[in-house]
Image (cartoon, rainbow, N blue to C red; front, side):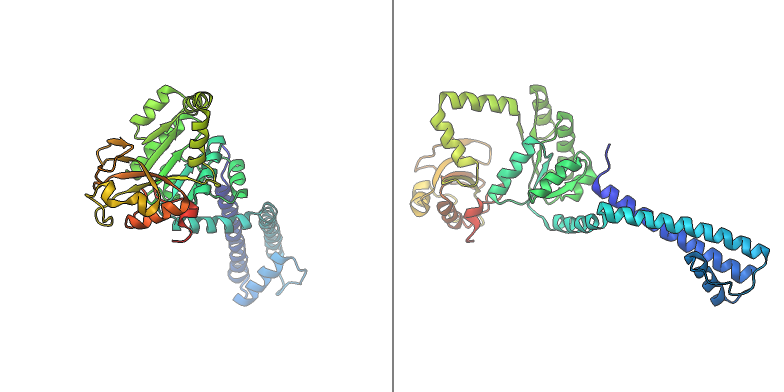
Length: 358
């Protein structure tokens, strides 16, 4: 397996520190020899050691015998090897940009540490790229996790927050703030990796919403049993959408136009009703007058027990824990958000345009 950029930075850092420690040891060895064996004053011993290791060509501070000159030869060779090693590591670090990478990693860690209520995308393949594009269009905070350097570099070029590591490991998920995340999307190449990632995420944060990609029907079922809140099979979903596009093309064009992309006219959004902030708990849709006040349309209501009410009527009451699924323009949804409390949408954010004036 290839080392991550962080591992490479740590390796070069460790090697430079080891070289510095070794050089300090050689310096101490020379000083102790000239002081204790040759009987020189400490300052003369240090001075002789330094000019010997620096190979500046100065003469002996005090006359040396045969034993002292043999030691000095050994000291010079040790110094050349040690200094050569340090210069080699330092040059490699500069050429490979490890120092710049170290600064970038520190900035990245600080940025990730400030994220809260964010999304985590595990895997930056074809599926992960599209997910990141949609998240960026919605204006949500997210971080991309991938083990491959090439994928991480591509994500960085697009301006995404990234972390290189194995998403199936608890340590990696902790570093990208799984405890503070609102949702994790497992879009790794293999079903096994996605299953491990979901299991780890749910163990570390039982409240995180886990979305997983599955290649087969069997994997879909196992991911659901593993705790995934939603499992999407690109093949099954793709087949259904292609069939719908063939049978109901206008409907599909409309649906695609309101759920994806950055240049939409209409948006779909969901709002979680909370009795502490919403003044309309217990009211019917007719008495709440949400449509007349905001212009947004309530398409469906999902009750706290999971019951879905499609096309609610004017007499449908609003209850604690309801999730309103609404459609409207950015301005209409912004107005509705203010009318309802304001409330936080369930997962969480309104479209970027909706938030701009809040």
